[in-house]
Amino acid sequence: MGPVVTNAEANSDKLLVHRLIRPDPQINREQNLFYHVVGIAGYSELEDKYFVTSGGELSFDSYFNSFPLNAYDLSGDLELELRVRIRGRCCVQVIQAEYGKVDKKLAEVALEGVDADAFIPISPTSSNALLFVRVSSDETVIIDDLDYLISGGGPNSVSLRAVITTFKRNDAVQATCLKLQQYFSTNVDLKDAFRLFVVDNGGETKSVPFSQGEVIQNDNYGGAGGFARGLLATVDEGWATHVLFMDDDASFFPETLRRTMSILRYSKHSDLAVSGAMIAQESKQRMWENGAHFDRRCRPYDSGRDLGNFESVLSIASEARPSHKGRYGAWWYFCFPVAAVKHWPFPFFVRGDDIFFSLSNSFRIKNFVGIASHQESFSGKQSPFTIYLDLRNHLVQHLSFGKMEIGRFNLIAMAWSFFFRFNNTYHYESAKAINLALSDLLKGVPFWSEQDDLVERRALFSKFVVNERMRPQFAVELSQVHRPGGKESVSRYLVRRLSLNGHLLPKSLLYSKKALFSPLSRPTERGSFCRKEVIVADLRKGEGYTCHRDSAAYFANLAEFLALAGKVVLNYNWLRKEYGKALHSLASEAFWRSKTSSRPESRSVRQADCSPAGGEHDGC
Image 1 (cartoon, rainbow, N blue to C red):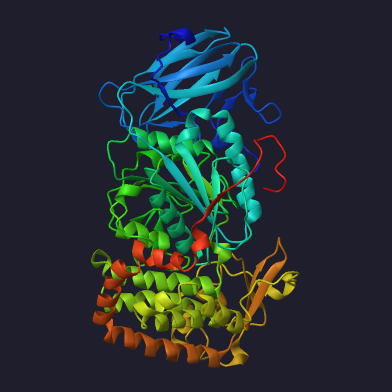
Image 2: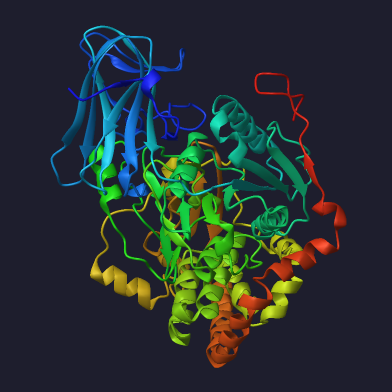
């Protein structure tokens, strides 16, 4: 049995760095992401407590409740220990787990149920492992807390200013801020090190139920403009060492904030940026993205990995990825040092601003097990407008940075891969959006300054996008549709390619049944081939739309794309110089200050007048 120190013997220089996260039905309640059990044990939502009954065993070998040793620099005289608050007699084990290796027991302690904190020293033998706690008992015990603390040495000073940019999602912002108020009311040791700006681009959020939160009214320059406005206010305030960008529709466990600040406090790298993973609301046991790099497209790490399987979590934790020139941190949860900011967001409005920000600054971007945000997956948000936004930012990323140059023909090949898929699957409005992105790219830097609010572009899309809109009460007659799947023969593939996915074939050769696709997968060229119509529908929600084969629209789009592609090829050198200048003219503090100088009232930051957590908020 290992040594145990009682509460009276605890040193005052200990810093609480990591606490248990409990399942939350509003965020994530997938059991295997928090704990695994033998016998009768688990978590009681009613009492908000973990418990173990006689003969049971509760292990916190999980994505959210294991301790990532690779997140902390524990060299020198720093010491790690576990503070245990458990009611009842039990056995507590601290186990070190590493992918591909046998688990190692670092400590085992018998607790007699005394009403006091117990402290268990931990001496890890690996810096790339995960620690977890296992509790077993021959009687019913209640686990109040299992806290990791670090003592010795002097941690870095960290003051964190979070920025949430919102546009007409007041309910989501209110819910997030209420959770923050409740969290900081019981975690008072962090209160003086955290503040929040809510940048309201939609004029809907007037106050928030968080005593450390403030609202900034802002003109609508999209996410790029909102986060830039929050960064301006942070710089002017001069209080924060770090800024955390978060989406308004993302939900996260507030304990994530403690972990983020603790990692920064015990890092030897002043340029460290903590990037949160994303878990999709539609599949809360699987990873959507655990960091990513950009190279012609966004390339997520660990997508689809089962987070309920601890072996999979260990594998994720063990992968030491080399620094990639295109590494970026997504703004659903991205924390970075203010002092390391050299370039500001590019005025993309939305889509790609987070990629550009990471590429233009020399952050040391890392993801860590247990730091994640939850939100709706992007597949379901696809539209001609988002496709336009995606392609234009992809083009600009490769033109703006020398390290990202791929050459004129590869640049066009990238655009062609976007265009060909949508034009071939009867999504002619999406193909037209791609042509518009190329056309706007050719206008150079002045376009981005003049169209930073996208008012004209949004109005244009509202006019020409007629078919490709999800419509409510959309009925699908299943007997009249075909769900594409299976393998494709070589002969069919050749005919499909030579006939431009059937657009050169007579209507008499087309199938009678329509092809049905879900919003998450979207139509494929193979599945759309020789169909008169394709349907994109969410059968559960009763939403969808239909696209018809239209050879005239197909060839009109194709002709326009080829003409625009030729112009990009001919003007490639000019485009590279033009967008290279944008790094200093548009992605700059001066540019964004010019956007707020014409609206003085937008610089007045108004603190919410809200009651403490548990009181009446009157709609704050």
